[in-house]
Image 1: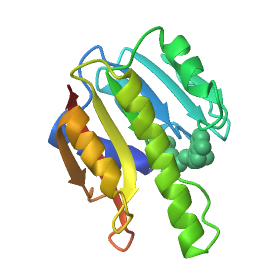
Image 2: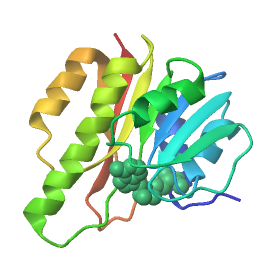
Image 3: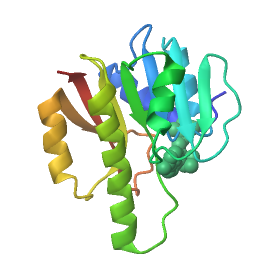
Image 4: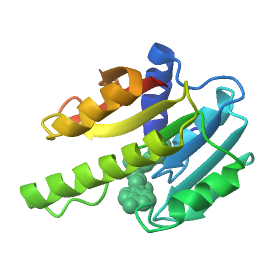
Length: 176
Ligand code: SAM
């Protein structure tokens, strides 16, 4: 079975937009407990490297490390473990909210930006990027950057995502 409910969200995103290609090399940010890793491998990825603040039970076919993605060197370590540039960068990273709206909002945006910077820098041409985002998050500048770097940028609200949450996924397809 899937390790997380989040697995159903990536399944829906992939059903709609076909982000996981056969033979894809995938980097997964905020990967614990490993649901997205399972989905990526099941749908044809041949190599997955993932990181989380929390330890992740091993999954055959994946290199999973414990660490903070925003720490220096962690992104490079993932590229090393993958053995080359990714075709797909996934980020489902979310921090524990502190309940202070402005602070939480700022943290969310920083995580999304860190993931996007990494994707823009290292994805192969033609590659794609999926990130958790939030309705109402002020992503103005980032959206424009992604639109410049990728052919298409879409937002998806999966059925599996709670209706009352502001969670949406931003999907950038076909890096130029
Ligand atoms: N996609 C995962 C799955 O299907 O199993 C679920 C991911 S969960 C919604 C979000 C994860 O992001 C948490 O496990 C959290 O520890 C991780 N996270 C938050 N900030 C992070 C950071 N700076 N570096 C690495 N992981 C982070």
